[in-house]
Length: 190
Image 1 (tube, helix red, strand yellow):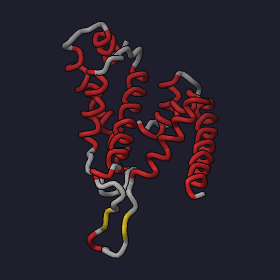
Image 2 (cartoon, helix red, strand yellow):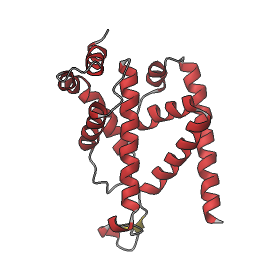
Image 3 (cartoon, helix red, strand yellow):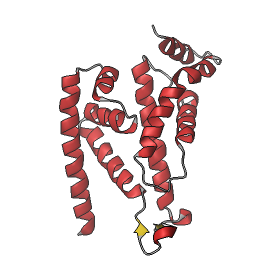
């Protein structure tokens, strides 16, 4: 049993000191995953990768469901926590009192408005939610690959499936999500 798995088991059993031991072991990997996610966001984000890691970690260790059976399971939960944080932030930015429909402007190019970064993320989140209802394993793979930044091999290992299966799921999920996002955009424009 790895050190991370041992600490996760201790947290599950209620050891209050175990959470303090976990962060140093997983911090660098979570930080790398968060930095990768933030690099995919549009410029102008106020949330930094470090803040994303800390927020996700707090949600994980202080949350009600702390039953992780492996390192892979923990990182799946971390990917889901990061996804939820980014989606919540995107939704909050769309609210009227947080700027709502206002668009950011690059001061060097005042005549060229920048689209709000949250639209694509929200469309993807809606599509992933629909995929989760029909194909939960494929949706989990998308979350691991997109939100946690895992490679195909790493995601396959975390899900206990073969790399070939992960590659098939990934191809299917990407095509399905692209189609779903296109259909939802076409429906909105009608």
